Image (tube, rainbow, N blue to C red; front, side, top):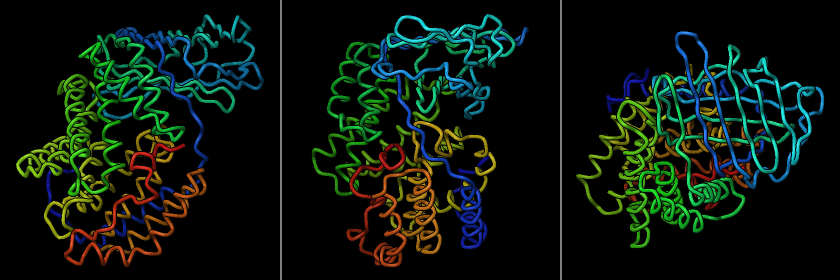
Length: 461
């Protein structure tokens, strides 16, 4: 799908880049919906999905315990139907989010139960959902029959979305005890892992900085269960978030920062071994691990390790072209703008992303703002602007910054981020000159939107 092996820039870069940027603006020119608020449920979650290939049928059983996200419920009996469900998965075979459409659950099939409501439909006419219990103490869903689009393993994750009125609940399953074509079954997380994941999303979403709490809980979770790949992943990503917040330039990492990124690297390496086997699981995880390994190698001044990490990034971009092609953009703040490594970054922008555009059309969770990153577009476009600016492509950079601001203004992005994106467009000539002057120590920081940390620009709600 995407030729990521070749580090050279093909064709005429300026002409390709303009076409790419223009195409990207065209994609974004349609109606931009405001980011929808969502709550991630983590407490006591478990799931099992079966598939009978011969019969063409499947089933789902999803359970969540008394999560804080269930304390306040909205009435699903308001007509016309105000409750909608979608079960989606991320099959290893495609590395694309797939599943049936979001389906409305008819309001007349709901009835009151202690603590909330329950939906019953033995025939499963609406997306195969036969029962859904929606209370302050539990969320439980059963689905089966011909209307249910079976989950086809192996997968990287499975996700339930329940939307009631303006409230959206998300439950995602990553670690599995079984993950094959016939059955996908999640491994239950500990209370520490559930609470740690909740603190993780509160931090990335901008509700509160709970990074210390998240790291403490997740460390306890992996001490309890060394094979909890999801807890290892969140621990590593929380450390990476803190490192990037405290150390905008990996070449200037101090001793505490170096310890932070080395710990994140080790946690993500462990997560990659548990969540990706080489032919099944979530192939995005080793991509994140390679990015952390690169930053740690830069901080330590270990050039052979830098080379090895970059080689891993390139290899993993072939394994998962749509997602992992983003990973080498981490080279942008570090590598000199006229280097072969930076030429590879520009190659990805000029060649890889035009090829991705067609695949992105129905991949709202990966490419747009429909998933756990409600401002994915805006943050990505600011990063593209920085990459173009460092490469001396000021018009492409200005276009990216201004598109980020326009999309963000329509989509409810943080107003300070919108203003800063416009300011970056106004000062792009000066920034490009500093990148090009041969002095790497006066380079403007990347994704400089106000000290929130790189992850926050996409995940802040």
